[in-house]
Length: 213
Image 1: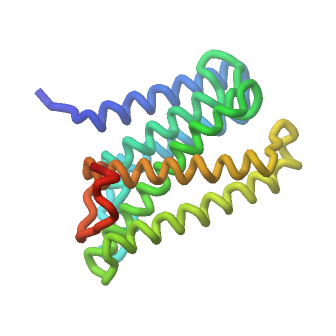
Image 2: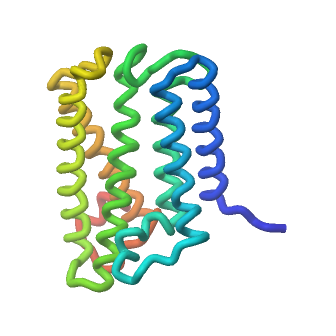
């Protein structure tokens, strides 16, 4: 009997949730959600393709390493499944993310911050095996990259408001999104430091360990 890991089961369940979202989009002809769910399904399939079919060149391995770590992909899968379900509650026309309950975007930003930080930190951690980067730098650089990505995302959203009439966010909402992204990243740091999940920092790192014990 083949034993399936918890991570693989969560990934499969997340794909099923996204597929239900796609069916919901088709039932109600929500073009935006059909597109969103379709892209999400493709995205969740890419790691399997890489793991089963592709062996990356040595120089690219650190940058593609998150795709080969099922624990990282599990966090990504949970984020995608939750986000897709908030944007279109399965088998309904409810859009909690943009319309009925806009505060629900706090959940997506928290999970999104967690996911982005974990993936960036994983890449930097792998690079630290070959380059003079210690674990403190991995953490600092990953938070800086997350901040840049978060600000860039909020600017892109603001610029797209004129094209999507039902989306409008105040400056306070933008700041709240950045805070939630950061809190998600700190949760990722806690997971890595406290539980060594979804990966373990390769070099010693001291940062008031009692905060994470």
